[in-house]
Length: 157
Length: 157
Ligand code: FES
Ligand code: FES
Image (cartoon, rainbow over all chains, first blue to last red; front, side, top):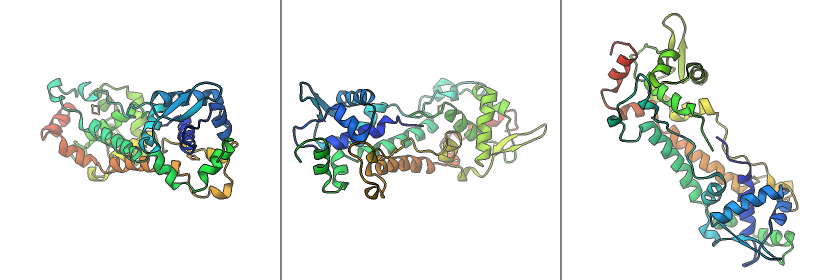
């Protein structure tokens, strides 16, 4: 069970964009340089965040990425699922209905209790990440972080 | 983020073994036939459960598998981690210390808040699965299940 390595990238890029002045943007090149990441691959992941509404992309000479909605309305779950999808890690293939032990279909109308417990665990994971917003993350950073971030990105602090 | 397809196999095989009479065993061949699974690959997964102490293997002509400890002391987490390992799906590679935005090492003595939140979500998943035992699963099966299971496995019900 592995999340893609780009999960860390997009979490950090989203937290970085959350520190910009209202209306300011950062390009994929700037974000790639900020964290020393492969720019083309990062740009693809940022586009996935745009499709999920987490980021907005602006075009033109000063174009780039900014948050797609307020930081208090963006959760870690939305960011993670934008790059990894929302599929649950456990897949039930209904093996209870196969082989010598196969249960008849009429006894399988309810979800298998094992599949149910696995789904509950996935919901616990999702609920944990849905309970953390980018605004909450910013609150845990040092007060000086946004000024530092803006200045490294070449923007007035 | 995917669990191996064999996760469903081992969860069901463990629940099946939990329904046997005390001291009774079932072989990998019997369990494979019960659920129509590839026997050699299933046997490997069952061995992983033995290494984790979830199952015990007995040898000899009537050899096979049985639970390694009481069903009330075997959790779904132990079964899942026996086949998939206990590594967390999220891997922090400390990108906060890389690139133009690199934080100095002395500011990175505490775990990054993003890595911390991802670890908390994994702990929520683990806690959910650690809270379900095989005994609890058996309680949710129809009262007739053990007799049916034993009879299909060719054992006196
Ligand atoms: S049939 Fe899939 S988990 Fe039970
Ligand atoms: S440095 Fe890895 S999650 Fe922040």
